[in-house]
Length: 155
Image (tube, rainbow, N blue to C red):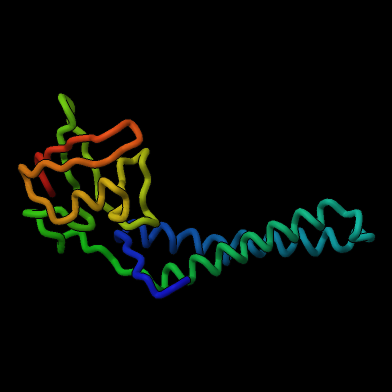
């Protein structure tokens, strides 16, 4: 990874820390044990359990390494530090799209989750919202064409 800042909310940081702790203290030791047991079964060249455990261990080690880098580079988005007069990382924004309203939270790219309406500050909509104020209208190019949004509130 490069030295790009990774923006996370406090909850996002805690979730990644929890995943890291779980992988290091629980999942990895379980896989090492499984690997050891599979190794004792004999011929490794035809041992599917050994191969599967080795691949899973490799995946877990890769994820642990990725999480270590993420957590090192993380910069927390303060819940009470963002401005409510303009959209910033951590802002919850209510926008009007046509006749309906949607609420989005602007987060760092590692926390983005469209299902939970958490949008990355790097996404087209996130980029368009950053720095805007209540009453501002923005247009965003979407697969369905241009979408117009009007900012109703920021918190």
